[in-house]
Amino acid sequence: MNIVIVSPLLPFPLSSGGAQAQFNMIDRMRHNHNITFIFPQNGYNSLKAMRELTVLWPEVKLVCYSYAAQMLNPTFVWQKAVRAFNLRFRADSPAFQQSRVLDPYGFSLDARFGDFLRKHIRLAKADVVEVDFYQFLDVVDLLPKDIPAVFVHHEIRFIRNERLLADFPQSPELQHRKEMVRRHEIAQLNKFQYILTLTATDAQMLRENGCQSPVGVSPAAVNAEVMPYKAWNGTVCFLGGYAHFPNQEGVDWFLNKVCPLLDPAVKESLQFNIVGGGWPGSYEKACGIRSHRLGFVDKLSDALHGSILIVPILSGSGMRMKILEAAAMSVPMLTTTVGVEGLDFQNGHSCLVADTPEAFAQALQRLISDEALRRDLSSEAQKIFRQQYSVEALTKCRQAFFEEVLSKIKKESHVRSHT
Image (cartoon, rainbow, N blue to C red):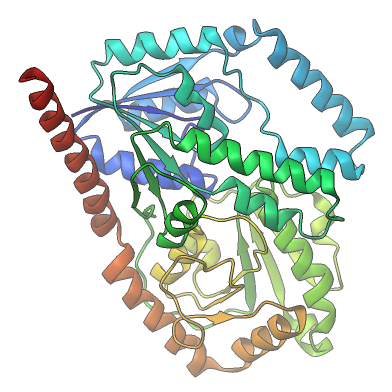
């Protein structure tokens, strides 16, 4: 099958959950399908990374929409200028903070980009076009109408917005803006022939909110090392980049709300490691706990194996790749309900779940003090990972979806040719 993937994110280096989600699926599917991957050049998607990925994926055609071409769009240039001004002078303004949540930013989806897309989709002789991530949801209006389009929804935007903005005063204006975003999201999704979500929870939310297009479930895969349990080494880890706001929100909550509730002796003995790029130096001087920014690590197991993973995620939707990483490596996990949402890991069986600062602090101290509990939770989590979330199992699921799509295309084509 000829598959064209259109994404705002080049899945290399593997510095985010979204990058891993794309990379691992394409890495397995590239030997069975002809894949063309179209992406925009920007600060995250560099030509250097493209060249490195070309070496890893000689079978995949990588097509870059240049930054120079994007700068020919006056609206795009104006948005960048306004954004830079607001970040410099209005970063703490509630109105700007709400805008950052509600308004997609940073991509030039104009007629010029549409021409570029259609040209390369035709050159690839695409049987199906896959569009990834909410930021490219409006790409559906630029696609050829005669080729089936699939949207892979990594995170439902209106659910993320509701959770991120829960602490703001719920003025009529804010309620109206949130509702407009929700309606737009559903309307655009209904222009796709097929939708894939990463969890059954997200699929159900879309159906309940008026999504009429067929919605399937295909979890993202992590190419994690499957490792035996290792005794706790005294570290607590968080995994995720600073650029993804729910990560920043979660770490702030842990440091400012949870850590003050820990026993002084526990706080003094702990080392908190933040694994992921972009974290400011201020995170190493918080709440009397020893914190270290490890940044992006080449081998995740060196940082994670033997630790306790915390997933203090309060907002967003979709699937937390960090949960699967920890499960594969037999790392005991403490998470919020949102952090483990849509995944088959249960409180007290394969992880601990706590949603208030008090409960989170108590659960962390329980994990720290109980070796048998850490071992038992880790063992059960790895069993679930092997059975349901291995790369092999999830790749088969995604392959089956595309084979089903191709079968429907052939049937529809046959019907049209005989009418």
